[in-house]
Amino acid sequence: MIEQTFCCWRKEYGGMRVNQAKLLKEFDTEDSRLERAVADLIVDKQTLKEDVEGKY
Image (cartoon, rainbow, N blue to C red):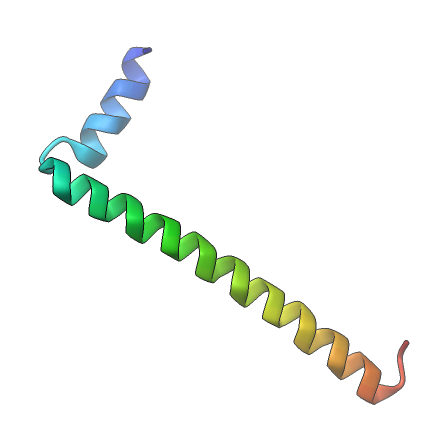
């Protein structure tokens, strides 16, 4: 592991306990899932808007 990677890891996780780091990972995973869901809904909304306006 290069020193820069270790420093970044330590900066983010250094003061955490194992259970806190696991919880943070779970939150990050859930956040990513929700961001993808929102992106999909935005695309769906835009498609419906174009259909209503007659822009196939």
